[in-house]
Structures are given as C-alpha cells and as structure tokens.
Image (cartoon, rainbow, N blue to C red; front, side, top):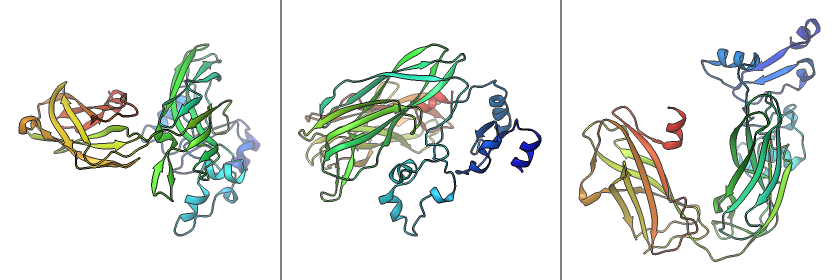
Length: 365
C-alpha cells in the first residue's frame, strides 16, 4: 500500500506504532520521513502532530535495533540459553558483523550535534577507582534541541580472560542545548560498570587490563574514543543504599511507619560478618529510624533487604503533606571505595502516595 501511495504522492511520512521492532526496509526508499512511535499512549495524536509540524523537536532514541528482515534476528532456543552466550540486540549484530536498518540508540532531530575533546581523569587507574570521562557536546544547528549522549565500554586484554561483547552501553544522558551552545559532559564509571561474572570463582569481579570508552549519539555513531588501564588492587567494598520503601506502602496520617531499603555492595570486595552495616533514615533532616547489623556479609554485586527500627524504639508517625526522606549508609570502621554514593533521597506524599525517588518526583511535578 505504501509503495502504491508513493507512486501518486512521493512526500509520504510513515508513522509506525508498534510494541516491538518492525522492519521498514521494503519501503524505506519510498518515504520521505519516518517516525517510529512504539506505543505512545492516549496523547499520541497531539504528540505526533507536534513533531510532524515542527512544534516540538524530537529527541527520542531507539531502545532496540531495527533489523532489515527476519534473517538478521537470532533464532531463540526454547530454553533461551543461546541468548545468553550469543547475545541479543546490538551485541548480537556486533558479534555477527551485521548492519541493521537502524542501530540501537539511533534517532534524528531537527538540529545537529557535534562531539569533541574527550578526556579521562585517570588513564592509569586501579581496580575500584572511579573513571571520569569528559567531552564537549555542541548544537551545530539553528534551533534548540536535546541530544541523548551515550557511552559504551569495550575491553582489550583483561584478566581474568573472559569473553566479552564488542561493546556495552554503560551510561547515557540527555543534554539540552541552544543553537551554537557547547556544554561539557561527564560520565563516571564505577566498579559496577566493569563487573564480569567469573564462573570459576562463582562471583562478580572487576577485571584488570585494557579498556576502551566510546561516546556518541548511537551505537553505530561513536566518534570519540579513549583508552585506559585498570591495575590490580586490594579488594574493597562500596556500600550504596537505594529503593526506600515504607510499611505500610501508602501510609495515612497517624500511621506508624517502618522504613526499609536495599543495601547494595557495588565495590570490588565483600563486606564481612562482624563489620557494622549502618543505615540512618531521616524525615525532613530529622533522624527517625536506624538499621544496624554486624551479622551479615554482602558479596560483590550483592544486596540485602534492610528493615529499620524507630529511634529509641519509637516509629515515626505519618503526617499529611510532602515529606523528604533520606537514607544514608556507612560501613562502620571499614574504608570504602567511594563515599559520595552513600545516600539516596525520596519524596513521600501523605495520604495518597508512596516514596518516590527524588529525581522522579522532580520530573513529574
């Protein structure tokens, strides 16, 4: 139908509404524009018209690779095991040296962007160090726009010598720029970004050796590249806390509230039984609950569910309105790799809400 329409009017814009990848290869040369809308929701009509009429500058990026045809898709075994050892998505396309119709992370805008000046804070780091990748991003077009910059990590010779994908997405960030504006952007790689699972030891670890970072606007457009080395170092834990929750999940005014959180070890060494794992919970900067245990150990990449007790045995009682919730963690008398990630924040709305991470609460104001 599209081909027949194009014979009459070649100025066709195709809008694809689909929950998954659909090949548009048979008609890609018959259309002037393509909007891959996925499932855009009940305001799809207005949103798509705003994009088509130029009232809004799109900034979406593909969350999947779009193949040319079915032959480019890995046949999935009934137990899904081949997806693990062969890879899926852009990792599959990379491993087979296949070029899809549209690469993972791709997406056009009504303006253009330029990447330049990549640098590293430490090109000769120890395992466990934070590696900061900084670069410049410039809007080289004539209208304001947002670019989703992406960082991919790949390996050279590493120890242990575990087979790795050609590259893996490790960070991304949306940056808004006015015409001609340049911003410096920094991505920080933590030990978690380097984890591999060593089947021989049955644990996660950070390998030592040669690594490469590539930065750009899509998995097939990565104009910036830099190399660094991780040297073997003593193992250290790195506790983080996230996912603050309450019981009851949706407290009402006057309810006694129990605070919980996920206690995660994102370091290079396990915490040990006998070490003090401490989380303090605050409501509007006042400490209201505490979790403390010396009877647990958390492996590298592992997590424990932490359930706190009220200060002096008294649980905080919910009050109507907005309350800022903070959880701070520390490993008592033990050095951590990174203390800048030891807290998280959330917003609790009473009576009709649950704890929402602060960054999400800011977005949905």
